[in-house]
Length: 137
Ligand code: CMP
Image 1 (tube, rainbow, N blue to C red):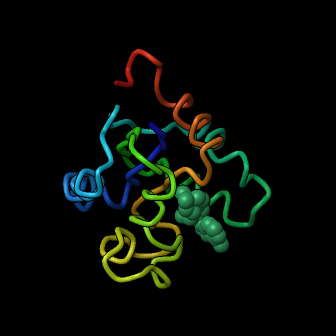
Image 2: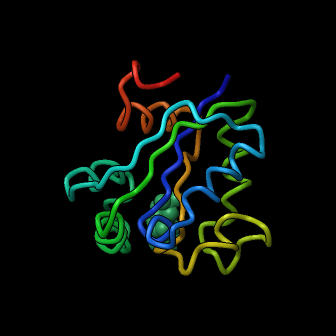
Image 3: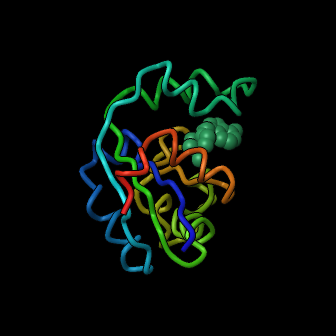
């Protein structure tokens, strides 16, 4: 079974739509293998998004990701990585297809409700960033 990492970002947590978003994963046959609510430190967020360190939006991204708690989830199922990306919709909610999480819950490209791993290889790295093996079932 493939696994991927989802982060429900501070904007969606503040809107109190965590349950609605998790329900969409389950409705699409993705299983919650691990989940927790946490708040990232600046060091955490900079490390998690290190791949974007040279991008002009990096500081805003980090500032936003540490602005409030997040809900981090390991999703498991057939094609979990691609399926989660379909459910999320385009990074920019203005371009996200109707019915996707970002179209329904996101306000801007920064406050875009959710993050999802962009490859199976990165999913392994991102899952290990947040969870010990004994926390994933
Ligand atoms: P995420 O999937 O979490 O990965 C990196 C985040 O950077 C992305 O979602 C957006 O929230 C944010 N971001 C801000 N500006 C851009 C941009 N121009 N291109 C890609 N991501 C951006």
